Image: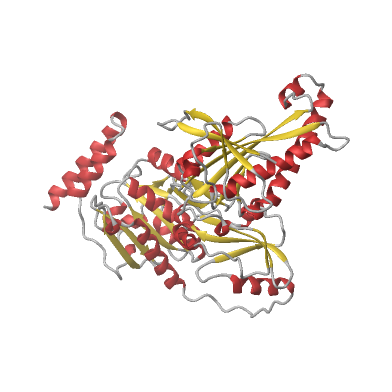
Length: 529
């Protein structure tokens, strides 16, 4: 049997040399064949890898900048570092790629414990290089061969993935193997956690440090916010009313995969200490389900200055989505493009500056009125191009009409030095989103699905100063918007509250929007005074 295996190993090595030049997919066959025919005695816990001469051989490694273009000799780590060596089938398989990413995400934790991570497979150097570059792997990958480094641990196995932890003394202290089958049995993440736990055990407890005591207003602020924070959550504090997620991301670790940071904007609050701060929840992506609890800080602080993601309308219920697109024109009706075409360079710059101020004044006005109608600003993409959410279609409609009324008044009586007017196109759709979650960069509550797309397309269809809405969504809202279809022209709103702006809905007909199979009836909302 021994002579047969030696002959098979020699044949496989010869086949590898030939097929590397002629067939780019040869490694798949080599892996399968080696796994079936090239087997050796496997090490057990407590054995020393130094008893096998293959541990002292050099192997081509092309996994990271530190080792790129050179060979790795595993014995070089003796007395220097612990070694975490994970053997996998191939660079191109999904499970193996996931395992490589998990080791990448936790690589810093291994190095902090004095360990080096090394990936091993029978893939060639070029394929390893492409794999390492595409996944941004910080650790080396060894291009092994049948009967090579893998022979120390029993040879390659196509049916399983294996991870070994070798102490700096050369002793095998951990051996973890799972079957390569779909589901939890092949969970590559468990290979990382088991290896890290063993490495931390080898390192022992952290050395005791001199106790330091910190005092002052920052410590008091942290204690106050900590009392507001639920268990299992991390709250990041910005001592400013203006939330700045750009600065926030500068402080967060740049992990990827399961440990990639995810944020949720908790809003701006006035605390009991009278300090006004912006708060953000931070958690690894693998724990995103904790955000589903939607625990608002409303009622826990003295005052909500700006609502957070968990104060927004619940994405599991029906939500009114509003899109706004501001436009700028002069008193004669010329648009911003026409103004630019007929102006010199210096006047164009001045016109853009004035346009920006006029749009900003609208944005400030709209934000000030949001709380009156329980509205929430999801995002602003470009100046004034906003996505908003309201609990009901009635509240969304009332906000739109109220803002348009204010803008009409401002345009009618502009400031003496202001020759530009701002009109806003608005679109409303009401329905249940497909799903919702905090935005990956801003942490603001975001919504997804047909109702969002419909609101955006309706807003694009509107003219400057016009409020359009989907009639189907409004009729299903069950709120204070009640209208009949007896009058084909104007449909007055019923059950108006005292002092509210009178609103009329006019049918504009059926519209066919991109991405929607059936045409939608669109209504125009106008204030009656």
